[in-house]
Length: 250
Ligand SMILES: NC(=O)c1ccc[n+]([C@@H]2O[C@H](COP(=O)([O-])OP(=O)(O)OC[C@H]3O[C@@H](n4cnc5c(N)ncnc54)[C@H](OP(=O)(O)O)[C@@H]3O)[C@@H](O)[C@H]2O)c1
Image (cartoon, rainbow, N blue to C red):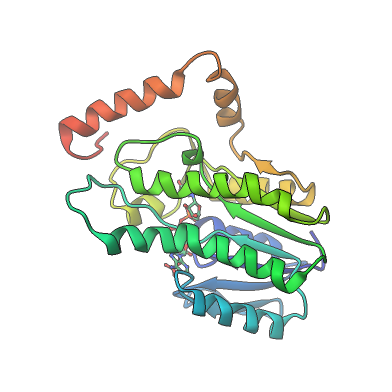
């Protein structure tokens, strides 16, 4: 990708920070997260502090981005987080918080980009997850947000013009602060580096692929799972441990 105007949410760490690092040499980047203290601004990078869980903040984000560059070529909807938990009580705000960040902000940003672009080309890239396919004990709310992204995208894609691409990315467990933020002391399997994910995303976006699987092993396992229920067995085993320990442990 060269000479593109790109918005990246979740740009302050992990996968988003890798995207900024790789793409900023040849493109203009509008780098978004709540804490922007570690995003270094350059002539190609504009750091923008924004909590994407609120519609009015996303409206302002678009206003500012369109001031920074006149049109938006690529939007990476990458901000997101998980809870690793046993749900103990009914808590509307707890559910709302994760759905607002992981789901509603993505749907809203996509509809907004479509609205302002009309029939002009753009690429909208969503960081979904391997958990868009597999429900893991302890991650029920998180998995449901990632399933929702896939469900929405697979249908909404048909509402876009042919020159407008909607791309989903399915990383497996990635070495970022994601698991710490989720409150888990265990990283799941299979695993990969954020750099691997970012590179696979850029390659897939360049080729306008609808689905990007940064882990080749996961892609193979998904195919094998059609005949041999390996994920089902893995989830059952993790579920047993989860029940016993009240949390994950190695
Ligand atoms: N790591 C994994 O194993 C894994 C696997 C599959 C999918 N994913 C997905 O990959 C994406 C990136 O995660 P990561 O692994 O790179 O984790 P990370 O290092 O924790 O990065 C998450 C990013 O999202 C930002 N963010 C979170 N809530 C936000 C909000 N309300 N408004 C604006 N920015 C917000 C964070 O910045 P601030 O806190 O400064 O706002 C941070 O930049 C997420 O969507 C995650 O679900 C991760």
